[in-house]
Image (cartoon, rainbow, N blue to C red; front, side):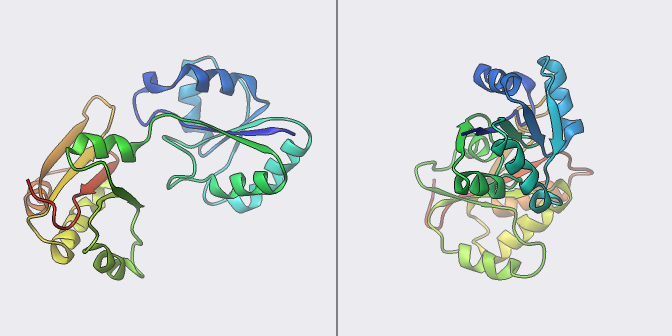
Length: 227
């Protein structure tokens, strides 16, 4: 049967791609990209010239048949997201599930991801943690935060730069204000930054900034952790 490769790509610094990932991307028949324009920067840097097609959250359901048709024709596909590991807050799950059901092989090519990079950089406990990803924007958001308030494991959130103050404010409301946390921004890039402190300190820090840019990861210590 054919192979669906799930390929992790750099979250910022293009040098972070592995030799294995490059070799796989050069060997497959097609590459499914979250955004072909974004992926083209990586492909151009490493002379990867393959047929590509878009596969993102708005067309994922419609493109499953296309993916299966390619695999059923004994051709291999690599699936990449804009950055990091496909399927982790990015498209990928539906294609992986469908490939398994059709009896195709699924091979994951590991690599960079923002969640564990921020977790390790935070200086907070890494032995037990949970990945929460993006919180709902409206419905269920406050309920979920209340549920997480008593969690004893380190928690990892993703957030957009224009909403980081909002999530820090909400965390101060639902968690203890003095709970240790870290905000990681622009990971692996030129202006990488990891700001560490209590939730209230981080809220104050980012409230006072004129602008906040880059992808954001918020890491919060579990209940009961102290330094």
